[in-house]
Length: 339
Image (cartoon, rainbow, N blue to C red):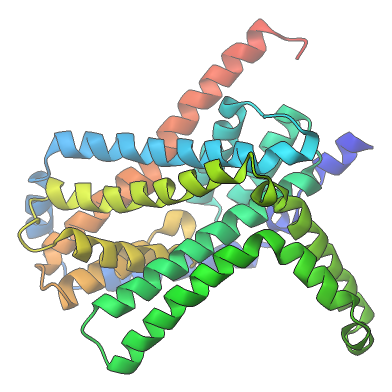
């Protein structure tokens, strides 16, 4: 029965064709608006000026960011069976998921879930709970970055104040996250809530609360949460560093300061929430727009910058690294056919 349950991935793996076509269409439209009016001769001229050593460093830091995410996942998973999973298996699942997302948005999450469940023989429902917390940590950090970004931009004072509030709320959310499952269960157990909600919705919410409780066990473990707390900002620091390395690669440091690259990085991170294949189109538009409109970078240079950054970070890093990992995995399987 365990193998049967693992064979049934969550809803994402069975995403309908129309959703994939819609995601492809959105990406195509955003790519069109990104490249509209582009002088391709100028575009290629700017792209050819990129420093190859910095681009190589960009690839390396990209791999490191995914490795740190896989390492953090080990600590989130440990309470499931009181053991550490293989870093290699965790990394294969993470990088493979990103590689799948290049072609099939969000299906990479199902791949990540099934890959680790099978390689480590873990119940997928429990693994899914840790993935949920993994994403919640990302959303909280993104909220903090966005709030900080709004406070640094010369905007209406109400927007700046809203950014400050967002920062505070994100910090509170991060503090509450370890007990979110218990809090949600307590709310749902209250007679007033249980009576008002439809039975099906109540059942789903209780299931979600149970998943949160499983996923947050590591966040309340005094032996595990310090490593999670250390690795989480390092993961996002690598993402920010990639943006800054690309600035150096394109010799834009006189126009774009590290703080500016943080702001551009935040816009780019928000675009990832749009489920286009490999964030194509959405990332191009979200990064090019502030570069051109806020920092007055030449549109063709901005487009060359984001195209190369996207190609390396979103396409080459996951696809090349995943291919290498699958090759290693295949060699291991051929040496140990019994496993």
